Length: 149
Image (cartoon, rainbow, N blue to C red; front, side):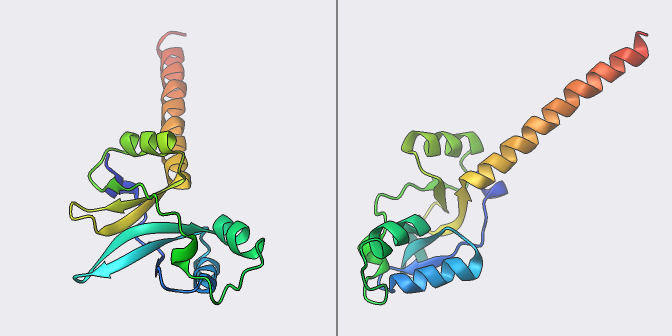
C-alpha cells in the first residue's frame, strides 16, 4: 500500500504573503489544525512550509501581535518534510517518527503538492489493520473449536 492510497487529497493551502488571520479563518472554515504554505509557479503548487493552530497561538496571540499584519511566511515552519505519493506507508510513518512531525505533505515526482498524510490518517489505518488481525485470531480460535470439540 502506498501513500497515494490513503492520503487526503483535499489539502488546505495558503500563500506565504497572506496574513495569519487568513490562515486562522481557513482552519476554522475547514475544521483543520494546519494549513500548508505553498509557492505557485508554472501552474503548479510546491509546498514550502506549514502553519499550525499552535503556531498561531504561540507566535501571534501569546506575543500579542497584529494578526492582520503578520504574514504566514513570518511564522511558518520552514523545515518541511514531504513524502512522495508512491512511497510505502511504513516509510512515511517512519519518517514522521524520525522527524517528530504530525503532518507530511504528499508530493509527486516533480515536487508538486498532491495530498497530505497526517498522524490521524496513519493511526486510523494502523488501527484498522490491527482490528483485522484481531478478527483473524478470533476466527481461527472458533474454527478450531468447531473442528476439534
